Amino acid sequence: MKSTHPASLGLASAMLLGLVAALGACEKKEEPKPTTSATTGTGAAATEPKKEEEVKIDRALLVQFGKLPDLFASSDNPITKEKVELGRTLFFDPRISKNQDVSCNSCHDLAKSGADGLATSEGHRKQHGKRNSPTVYNSAGQFVQFWDGRAKNVEEQALGPALNPVEMAMPDGATVMKVLTSMPKYVEAFKAAFPADKNPATFENFGKALGAFERTLVLPSKFDQYLAGDDDALSNPEKVGLKKFMDLTCSSCHAGPLLGGMEYQKLGKVKPWEKTNDLGRYDVTKQESDKLMFKTPGLRNVAKTAPYYHDGSVATLEEAVKLMGTHQVGMAFSDQDTKSIVTFLKTLSGEPKPAMMAKPELPPSTPKTPKPDPR
Figure 1 (cartoon, rainbow, N blue to C red):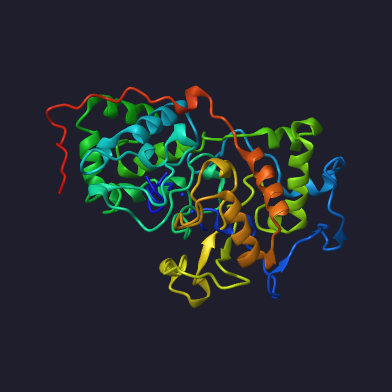
Figure 2 (figure 1 turned 90 degrees about the vertical axis):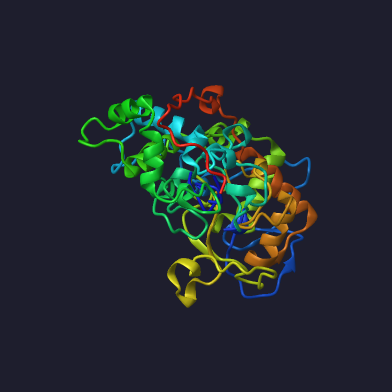
């Protein structure tokens, strides 16, 4: 799916600017200026660490990131084994799309770091939306879903792509459920996942099952080992990058367990952003103050989920970091600072276990199952 969809999550989706706040949409009024030395977390000048100098990080500063949970629990949608199994099956099933050729995994490929590597994902009849599909890994922990925040959680977001004419193109939720309930194994799976419901096979529960599955897609990395107290989990160059990330104020927006995903920021907050017709959250609220406001993306797995920004317009992480410095922070990051930050960002990449990526056996279609519709 993509960002305009789920489990954007969705096709284009659950989301700024591929990395658009991707590295610190922080407000500064002055024109961008070169960074030849770091600044401390409080703004005081600091000497650039020498290559052979071992960097010491004040662990008190690491509190701003916090602990990544084992899963993203929800009191509104308690996670059960049965829900997760149903959600996983739905995630991989292309029959929830009009032509039965697009699944959630098409745009949020679990074997490709939860994304598809495209600027914008391909949906029904080879159409493309206008926003980049973010990774589905760790996305359930963000404060809202989609780049513009139009869905409050992954359960709500999961309903979007199936009905989006550019993504899966189903006419309505009833049609989605007509397909699923034509297969006895799906009927049984919905009953097992929602045993207290008189009518468990509903479109709302379709979203809840997908949401429950996505809430289990937590992907830690060696950065979490470092946060837990293992100083040797990061190399010295990686610690240099972490220090730069904090000193140059990237972490003022990219904080929390996901290093982002917890607020909106204006694209081009310091220096206007060129070449964009996407007004971000304004499209949802129609409030002038929301023009060019996008959700600051989390940076987990960012090194493996190019291209970047809300429109997938930037091919490399290095370029994305430099653009963030210019437009969001108000600094022209030096090549060395950029390299150091990218080195740190690579520590946020985790490797999913084979079981997490495993494609389930899909229920067989029956004579009652609607046929693909390419129109």
